[in-house]
Length: 219
Figure (tube, rainbow, N blue to C red):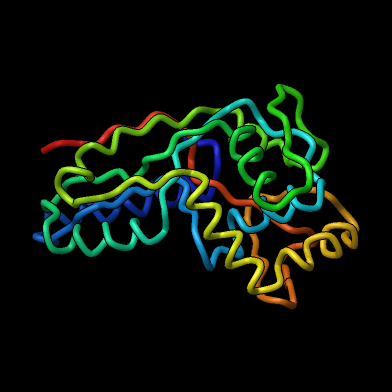
């Protein structure tokens, strides 16, 4: 069972699209893991802000796979041009636990790296903690072979994200943003954008892709 509602809706949408195969619809499925790179003010950008502001003491003991946003975009184009109808292509590459991700971010922006723990951080929702306690293992060999997908090192992905955030002033505002919040709870979805650092929820937010064991389906 998929433990996060957002990811459950993604799976249901995929299932509905695949039903179109019975009616002659050309369907090729792309499943990216955690996408990292510039222009992310919704998912990993808030995580970087939390680390920079030293507002996240612990994360779950799980791990995940990560892929660069530009390679994901290229893979979508390649799937349109080369993908086989009815098949699924998983995009991953770098593998790391969430504590390692925090350490990489901390080396880039300062602040304090969260530690892996079996105890939930009070600033993290139970749903998010459950997600970060799972392990995501992805075999993307088919995407490498068919789509020419290229994995990127974790530090390189986050370096580009951090560089963009500095230009946008998102790291300059990180301390003021996190210290000025009424709550330190990390939610599962939301948005922080530009120098005005707006949020659609009462707190800054983190959003992750479903952590679980995934395999490409061959047909």
